[in-house]
Image (cartoon, rainbow, N blue to C red; front, side):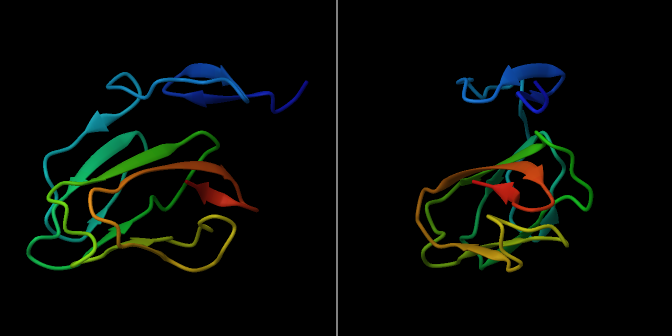
Length: 119
């Protein structure tokens, strides 16, 4: 059956199955305090204490690519994080995404051109 699994860091995972995201799947970066273009397979601790931050999704994406974002200082409600779509859809929409919940953790996985990046 086609499209019955996704691949994350070279590991096939059946659709509908559960996996635990850990350092095997995500390469965590140092704390980010300014606008950044993300790279698939990486996790970002984002500190918006000094002001709002924009994180740009990768320009190219393949099914199963993922990026992870964590509110480092619990300040997304005061200084929002904006996820810039970089020509891909987010949740099937052609608009950027704003995260305004303190302590939010976000995982985006690229599915296809129709839905783009899904939470």
